[in-house]
Length: 232
Image (cartoon, rainbow, N blue to C red; front, side, top):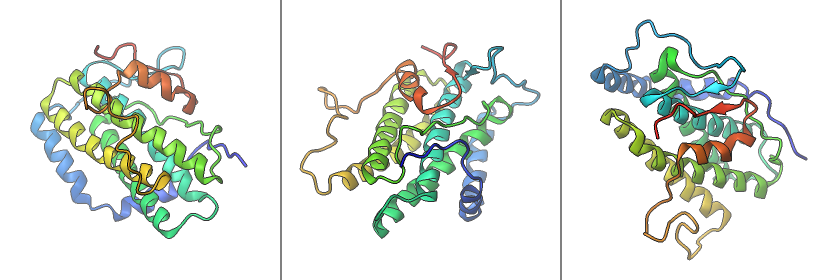
């Protein structure tokens, strides 16, 4: 049976965040303060355009909002997965998927905190195409989201001007790549292939532009997202 997620519960997030060492956020805030760019002062709200389209903004903050939007999507997805585990989910799968959920929530909250008043609103996911009761459907979607996330970070890296942001993005994409690997192994344990479909003919991880990524993920978000002002 397909289930539509209209709004993820805050309860799992709260429980998870209570377990996340506050030092993580303090360290993040420390890095941000060192750059001086996370101290936004009297910034204005800019997330909604007149037609209610969510505009990600421009410059580095636009790219951060772009990452924030993707992390919102991933966090909401894994939150729903663990709220409604598919039939016969093994203990190992629960452990892995819970761990990934917690990572994605931390990533989401990191960007939300870093962006402050520059952050776009909380997006409303649309997971109506995913059957959360079916293992194949869930893991297939998880692979799609993780592979997309890695390609998104890879493609946006060259657009980031501030090296401190680039450093954080590099750290996050390495975690996302581990997620992608873990999900791929759940789908096809001990496979002989290596990163099938994710490595280009140059031996490099795929990297897609924000326009390509946003077009791909739009069906999973109720809100219309615009990246028209993002760096190119």
